[in-house]
Length: 483
Image 1 (cartoon, rainbow, N blue to C red):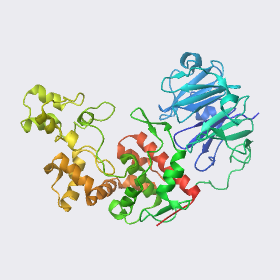
Image 2 (image 1 turned 30 degrees about the vertical axis):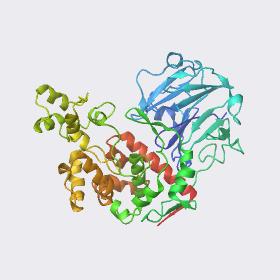
Image 3 (image 1 turned 45 degrees about the horizontal axis):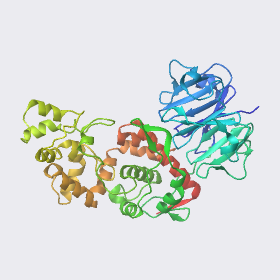
Image 4 (image 1 turned 45 degrees about the vertical axis):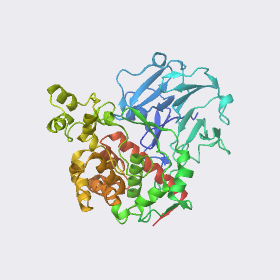
């Protein structure tokens, strides 16, 4: 009998386990990858020897959890292997979850996961690592249109659609409206290329290569301006946090808030200042998604949010009070604001902000590198070395003193108000990432390398890849033009 156990990875692939084999399904191409199915034992070292996986889910801590009978395996997504010491008993680590069998589990975009067994389900709070009170409940009571006697598997796509499987059928569930879409269930055969005998296309059904070049903000999607389509049609399908990607141990939203249309137009009507007279569509998406992330959708050359304590300390992020910036202790001593060795040591640390109460010292601290050279602009350029090499030539070319010769407030104002400074800051930064940025025009596009280079962490590269890839797929499906 057909029975799939499906789980969505953060690489755009869904893995479907069936008996002793597994399929790798490409979400963007909407087909099983060539060469599959393969043996579970060959592709998943450390899983059970035997014939199946019952259920699986990927958490936002970079781990996947795979269940069979009364056991589970914790799989490390980044190293692609089972963690040592597994399998373990469900009873030992999953309070309130059934201990002898799990039919299906799916992570929602609301911080909850849903476990299914037979005609019942549990709602699991990921943050508290426990089942919510009042569960289990009947599927029939809360899941309109879903089989009331149980499901074999469930998986949530990044477009906000969940798919439930049972035997040889599946149904599409609208997460936003909390109901099964009309016309379901349908047969898996004929609708999932590569599963249940459904033939694969002769070539992968990936989105066609984007045509045309972006030369301005005049991009039309589904007959609307790009930003109107994005805000009204696309973003409502992308609510909540990404189910698997975290940065600095914190969950991240699938996409930032709505985008300010007027400021977007200002930025991309100056394509040549921003990067080049013409942008390929993958280049546009890369720049758009990075600026969107760094400005929270405002598309204004803002300064990094947070006070001096946040910039100084290393809690949850890298402190700016260290090289390539000059530590504050030495600067304040040289400027005659402090003198004792203890004060210098305190101001040279990266752990606890000294929090001065004297107004003169408080103001002097804001002129030190850790605060003065915090993130600014459309892409939040940071560190004194980057300001000297990238910002200073733009400042002097447009009649401003160099950054070292400007007070912190004057430097902020120059970048915030002068488009001839903040727009080319983007160009200069990306010219220095020429190798990584060139990869966005690969087939398929590689946005991940640029994201990793910009942020210095691989997880941001994963997030950028997801955002650009998902946005391109949606634009292609809706139909778009650019000029």
